[in-house]
Image (cartoon, rainbow, N blue to C red; front, side, top):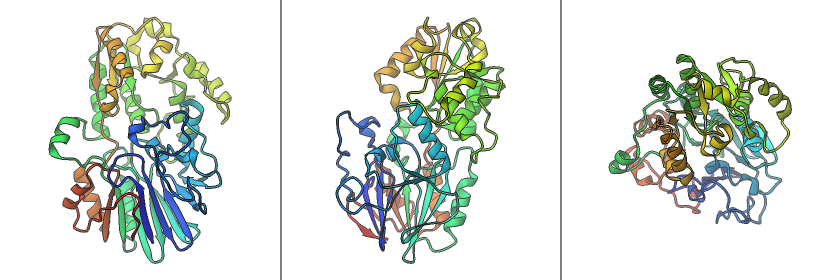
Length: 427
């Protein structure tokens, strides 16, 4: 087996890895670099210097792309691949991609194949097993690839501090059924101590986020805005529970409602049904109209529109609601401005707040006499958890990816192999 890190050996985002064995060539993820703003620049047909023969460039087509999850830094280039190449993913990831396409200007990526969880699937000369992992988007998975007597585990993006810690235990159990030759694993949060001190003030676990949300909501008698990505189902559940525990309803836009609807019953027990739960309402405005049609959206929206909470109701009773919000939604959902003393809870990576749109959002909240509070935990594994997980997996060698500081892995495990982008090596 030969491995090529086409991109990601020393950067976060833009991941693309190739596994070649016998007649097989499999690609793990094909993402946009973070510096692109997570969108392919308009008018550009090239794929940002990612020259992978048979995927974007001329040559015999690769057999498949294995998509670990739907974040753009892993999936954002898939629409540019050769059309005949299938993309394999979990059922939850496939459904999230549908919501992104219908409501959030996501690309249609063409042929998709759903992989069963924890069941080996043969792709040419490789056997692939998709194993769900805990990340800040539903449907994320690791992949075990077996061929030519070798076993490689690719982590994708993962963490141990969300709502599903048992997922990692199952991955370890499956990986330890045989000798693990190579572990290709993310190290997003590995960084020098001074960078950690200045950039990371997040809470430790998702449960701590939920507790803090309750505390914050109880401090205000006004409207609470929930600022988070709707595909982060752990965070959506945290806001939902915090709203219920403080006697409020959670008002979602159509996009967030559709994501929740699509994931209900797909391996995530206990998710509220947005069409039936009386604690969930639908915000008004253009957000109730999908960007594209299809996927049963008309029937879904017809039922959800019966649950619309009109803006006038929120203005009259702001203390009864927690409403999802983003910069583009304020004028639509609050045409007369935000109610007095609005509390906005920002629950994403803090770096986004440097953008002009979020600075304007903050100014709008401040103008009400309210405030913006950050309440977040990372979607990526803590460094001490990373050391523990590598020890549990006990690989012969570790290859760092999705990290700005691959050299820091050398303090976690004795047999670290530092790859270079575009340079193949033996597994």
